[in-house]
Length: 71
Image (cartoon, rainbow, N blue to C red; front, top):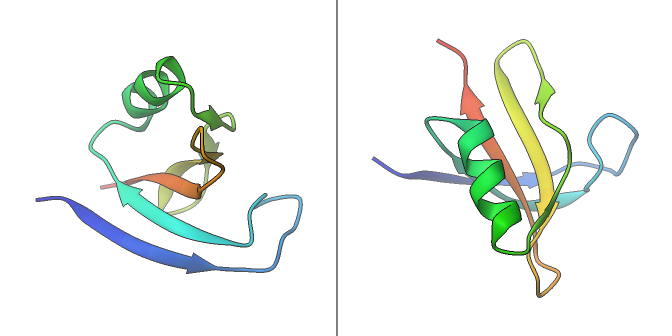
């Protein structure tokens, strides 16, 4: 089942965008590779205690995050 969420954080070095939409995916690396091939700009995948994620913008400048929750 697809999952989306919103993110509202101040910009900082660890999390490079302040706000945007989050998309939960089963495989963050595969999603990042596919989106980059379609013209999206994405950060390297980052590891947190609960998930792996990548921050990016689409070709129109909309900000978003790819999110894969750890089990």
